[in-house]
Length: 112
Image 1 (tube, rainbow, N blue to C red):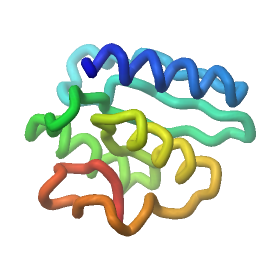
Image 2: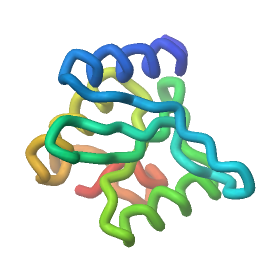
Image 3: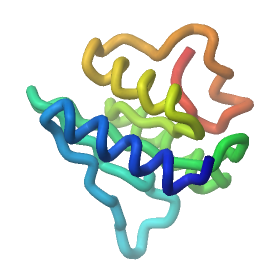
Image 4: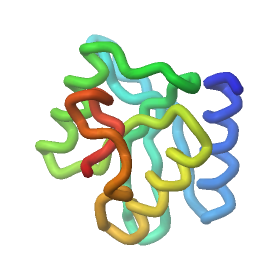
């Protein structure tokens, strides 16, 4: 599976939930997540997408942690399951499942 397939899955899932998954680009600010996810009810999150087994670069991990410190839901996904867990955590406002790898090793997948 390629990154673009995971990205298409995210876009389709979010659209099916009545939301938008906008491509996010911020000139002059490196490492911003790939997608700005907006769900009904004003739920907003930032998601970096990777091919299976890949992890965010150092500046991407830094940006994910920075967004979290500001109170934003942010993380990365390298599988359809990760996308589903991210969306679940956005809709329930609880952390992603406890079995996910810790932030130190993943560079920001999600909180444990």
